[in-house]
Image (cartoon, rainbow, N blue to C red; front, side):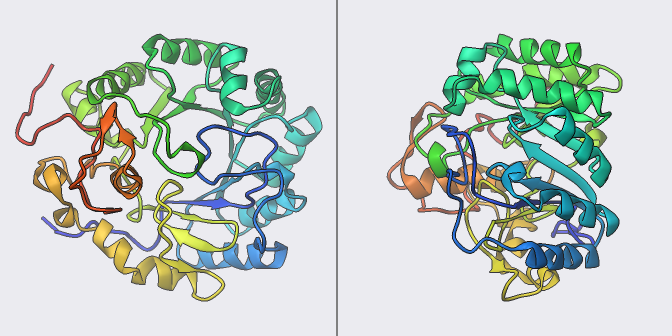
Length: 361
């Protein structure tokens, strides 16, 4: 068995935060987006040059995200250009600005999928989490507009309170709007969400199982995100793992580019490994020492490094880094004072599994 994970010719997914400007004030925002954005964001020419560099190393999915990407005036030009270069373009949006006209323009760019954030079927809960009254209604209207325009929709949900029933309600709501693709995000202590308490490990595990229970439906896609233990849970449930691939793909099949061109392993792991204004994207992807470490499962520390699932799961590298870097609460309990500071290779504190305890339902 090869020791180092094969990164292939290039990444499978690249997420580009095209701006840090946003029209919401979400409590968990990893990029700490606001109404102003970041000074020195990549301009249109730099964005197109970045797209060229990404296309030169493969044909990954390019996720145009933010902030709120629809606040960027050239977003349709960038999306169209990326699609023309052969990239599979997707967008992550809060949905507020998606009207019928915007949905039609998105469809015309060649975008293959638009993800809209819906955190609860209760408008009040969603609006409180997103920081703006009326956000839920506008997001739902955005989903309807996208569906009318024939644009495939994915629903993104951040797991807040440990109300497992909300998972079923979100999926039922999505089905009623023709949505069959869902990602459920588990909080990571970074950005504005650095002080958000995570779920206790046992609850974390139960929520993963509840999400995966919906994976048995043909033509239906669900994925727990920032919870790579789902691979182990899915195996225990007898699910076909080929639909997902590896649990944590930070730096192995995935990377993020910030509004100012920094490259990081994932959006929730704010550790720059290079900047595309100074280095070619291919050189960063293939030459980063941090990426090389993330591609070596045997470099993991703690119980993640001893676990028989380390190649398939890998533990959440962002959570391992974040909770230690900030000395905050994680997964329902405080971080031990002796833990390493900001160690991306440390064990994932939200995983209750002890290596060797293989069980099957």
